[in-house]
Structure formats: structure tokens, C-alpha cells
Length: 537
Image 1: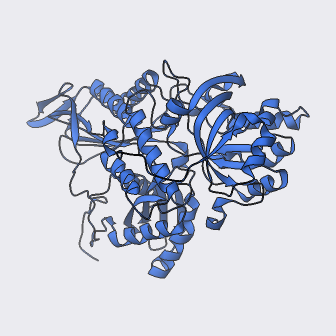
Image 2: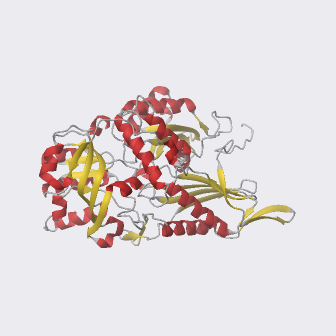
């Protein structure tokens, strides 16, 4: 038997994060039984959580913004890549004003914390982190997205964005309390995959084949360009998935780059480059064709049981909402995010071919008559009326049809936009109001189109073949809107909003909005063409 070795599983070698001081209050060093202890007033934890969740809702990391700028300067980037990147930079400038959050899906509040054994709070720390979440979502123009179950089938919105997911680990020495705060939207979270593999995967040919096949599972529903993370191995499935989440947030960037006899996890830089190249060559690009499906890739190799080889794939989306924080004897600190994203904008907007103007108020027949003239991937500039409806509204309308009631006229007279807004700031027509994932509404499309509704749909991400077939059979279209830039849509494109049905559904109520300069792309047309078909299995 080999000698005993203790190895920390994720040995982060250094912390190069730039922090800013929030306050020196709430902390003091005391002595207990001859040992120095960092005593933390739990109100300081509440303040820290509130500060972190506020910052991460409106600001991004400088390194992330630089990667968007890099797309604009890359001669290999397509016009569509550059249009998405430029729009996202503009969106960050709007969000940084502190009123409209970067994305309308302001996410599940997640906290991963590591508490030194010489830190004492005398409280249930998770409660105070939750209080910070509560205050942030109450005071800011954020969206309540958490749904709480009452029975197996009955549920309702919590109205607070609680509960949060909070994981606090202890046991390591020292007087430091480290945090990673994330807000994870549904689109991004839903593109986390676990594949139970075997030793047979662990050769170059099999790995390349595996990643070429399964990276396609990501599609564009989670709003690329992504920070892509992969974990190969893991002492359990949940360890593999948790590692991917941390890696996608940049939390594991300073892992070692080689393994050892103790079984430490490490970054595999060679495979990061290989997978990056695979992503670039796929052609999916930054949502509508091109090179930039991902900004970068993190590959973590982990120990495994001899009979298991879990592989996890996950992403941090274009709303890269991750922020580190810490409490030390010197005070309470949060990661310094970029408060001046305008410095990453080029002097002039990138030159690209003009968009096709579409007046949505000319009537559905006229709109479809114009759309049918253009190929998929055509960039559009929409003006006019959209009906906003998402999951619950679609379920309600299907129930009406099942009961023999007619399709609502608003669904027949206007395109439908799948979305749900954040809270509306004073002086604005709307809160952040970007598209939601189209695929969740796929089961309704053929039925609705046969009743004269959903003839033109606007949302984000790829759709199933059933939608392509329905559009071909019924003369419909699916237009892709850019996933991610919700703040700039609210400020520049959405001119009016009114609730027209199901007001009791809150953010899921049916709304009528008037838009100008609303960007979209033809993804599925009435001839059976689907931009994403070449990337599907």
C-alpha cells in the first residue's frame, strides 16, 4: 500500500484578483484561549452579499469586456460576430448606469464560501447572505425568478428571488472568509450537462469526437460568446458538476497545470486550446454564424473512481455575472468590476452590411411576404408592435384551445416575442427586456400556427426540427434576437409596454410592446430552412 498523502482537491495557487474595500467595520481580531480569532458581525456578511449582488447585476469584469473588444479587431470575425460583440459592449455601457441590469433574467443567487477555522460569526451565515440577496432584489430593478412549490404540481413565484443556493465550506486554517457570488440565469444554467463516460473516452481520438459532438448541445440558447468549462473525472457526479461551475466563473484559473500522486485537479492547457479550435471551426459563432461561439475554454482534469468517468460541460454566458469577495482582519472586500465599460468601445461602430427594415404594423401577411424574400442569417431591424408571451401564457392559451375557445386575436395579429421583463425604473417604458430561450415554447408552435397564431416568433437560441417543419407547413418564421443585451433594448428600442392578458402572472403576463431599431436575424423560414440545422446531430 502506498504512503498516506493528503492533497487538497482544488489547490488554487494564488489569487490575482483586484479587490476594493467596502468597509473596515464589522470585523475585529479578538483573543480566545490564547488564539487569535477574527470576529465578524453577521451584519457585515449581509452588507457584503448586498454589495456583491448589486455590482454583479450591473457591471462585468474588465477581462470579459476586453474579449468583446478583441472580436471587433479580429479580421476572421464575421459581421454577425462583430454586431453581437458591439451590441454587448453598448449594453454594458447602459447597464453600468446602475438602473437597467445587464440581463433581464437576473438569475438565481448563488454563493460558494470557504470559512477559515479562525473566523467566528456566532450566527447562521446563510441567513445573512440571504438577507443581502433580499435587500438587493427589493431595492434594485431586478427580476424575481424563483418559483416555490406548494404541492407537487402547484407553485408560485416567491416574490423575493429567494431561496438562494448557498454552500459554505469550513475547516481550512486562517482568519479569512472567501466568497464566490454568482447570479445564474435559466438559459445559462440549463446548458450544464453531465455525461457518464468510461476509461474508453480517455484517448485523443475519442475525446475529439466527443467534444465535436457534445459542444453542439450548447447551441446558442445560453447567449454566447461563452466562457466554456469542462471537467473530466471527479470523485462523484456532483463534484464534477460543481467544478465546472467554478471553472466557468474563472474561480479555478490558478490551479496547477499538471497532476500529481495525490490526485490534485489541474488545468489542461493543451486541451483548452484544442477545444477552443473545435468551437471556432463549428461556424455557430456569436449566435448567428461565425467564429466566436466561445471567448475561451477551461478544462479541468480530476481524479475518478476506476469504474466511472463523469464529464461535465457548462458555460458562463455573455452576462458573465461572477464576483469574488473576502473578509479579512483588514476589512470587507469585493472584486473590482469595470465601472467604465465605454473605454472598451471603438471610436466608431464596426462597418457592416445594412440590416433589412421591417415594419411589423403592416400586417402579418405583409411582414411574411417581405421575410420570405431573404435567406436565413439575414440581419433585420424591427419596428412596430410585438406581443410578449412566455411559458405560462403559452400553457394558458393551449388550454383555451383544448377547451374549444378561439386563439386570442393579439396572437394572430402580431409577432410573438418570448420574454419576461425585469422591474421598470422610474422614467423608463420598460425594465431590462431581452429574449428568453425559444426552445421551451417548441411544443406549442404547430398547434398555434394552425389556429393562425405564432406566425412570426422572436426569441433567442436554436429550435427543434418540429418548429422548422411547422414553419414550412404553415408559412411561419422564427427570428433570433440577440441573447444578452437586455439593458440596451429597454433603453433604446422598447418605447411602450402594456399588459393585455393574464395580469396575475406578473413577469409572465401577456404584454403588448412597441419597438424601434430592434435587432433580429432570420433563423427559420417558411421554406424549411434552419440556420442551426447544419450544427444539429
